[in-house]
Image (cartoon, rainbow, N blue to C red; front, side):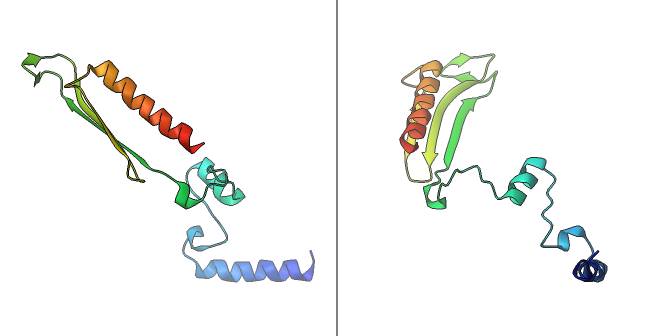
Length: 122
């Protein structure tokens, strides 16, 4: 053990005595989730070079009638979708309503809209 290693160990021991928890050390990045721990320590990101300004958030709002309640004078034993609204952080808003289309069609249109948005950003 060289003298610099010995001094490092002594300084570390002194520092440890002044800390109440391992989380007080800025040198140690420990998180409960193993994946997050790896990403933090390695510096690898999941955004593959994307800049923060390029990030688009998608908000999905699904309004439905709970099972057993009436929808347009019909009582159903299943939940029924009324409307699906998709809104992005860049200002795009799309709503799909079951007054004009059946549930399957509304779901298909919403999925197509999401996929179109994904393909435009790649």
